[in-house]
Image: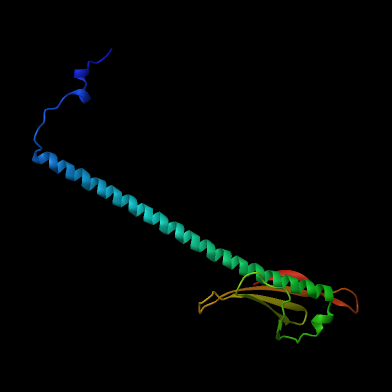
Length: 170
C-alpha cells in the first residue's frame, strides 16, 4: 500500500501564485494571536514570581518571629530553673508586686537581638516576663515578642518554700 509520490500532498508542486490580500491578512491575525498568547504567558510568569517573592518574605518574617519567641522562652525557662535551684532565698529578696528586671548571663546568637527577663513577685507566685527585641540594621523600627511564664510557691517543708514552674500564661 504505497502512495505514489505525486499523490501525496506535501510532495505536490504548487505553482507560484502572487500573494493576494486575504493571505496577508491571515498572517497578521496569526502574529497578533501569538503576541497575545505571549503576553498572557508573561503575565502568568510575573504572577508566579510575585507569589514566590511574597511567600519568601512571609517565610523570613515567620523565621524571625520564631527566633525571637524561642530566645525569650529560653531566657524565661533558664531563669525559672535558676529560681527552682536556689529555692526561695533568691526570690524573697525581690520586692513584692513590683517589676524587677534581671540580667541575662547567656549571649544571644542573632545580631541586634536583645533579650530581657522581668520578674513580678506576688504573694504566692512569680510572673516571669521574657521580652525579645530586634532592631534591623539601618531601620528606625523594632520587632518585639513577649512571653509570660508563671511559677507558684510550693511548701516543701514547714520552714522551706520553693517555687515550681507551672508553664506559660497569657
